[in-house]
Length: 183
Image 1 (cartoon, one colour):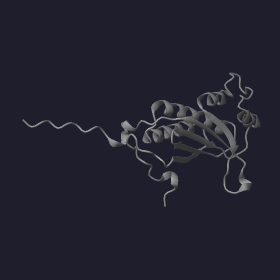
Image 2 (image 1 turned 135 degrees about the vertical axis):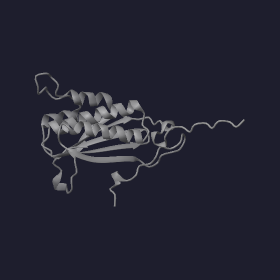
Image 3 (image 1 turned 180 degrees about the vertical axis):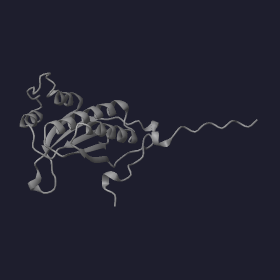
Image 4 (image 1 turned 45 degrees about the horizontal axis):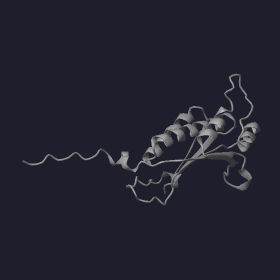
């Protein structure tokens, strides 16, 4: 039996059709820098499949990059779990790590402030600042991995408004070509 996130997704619906069922995708990747691009590409593919507009898709890709990068750089996780939801006009991304990490980063995420710089270029902490600018809302919660005793990781989530482009369903193929009129 297929897992819920591997089940066939809903196709794009015609204009005016209501989508009452949320669209969801979940995946796990190794906690490596090279996985960031894979996560970003997966988000783009799903959002295109779900007919989410380019601007919302671009923002979601950037959010996924920042959240995934933080999970890789600031924890001792072996894998990172990601979820993507579209519910009505809301898009939610969530990235969960497995292990402990920098408490400075976690505290900064909870308070919405950027942590002190950890590198010479001042790059550390800019990702969370970017998340706070792009997302309408975001936060951190304990990650639930199995039983209650296994809540060692954290899940960072971000939500933003998304727009759907129902008229441009890439899965429907090219528009039919008009037939020549018989003379």
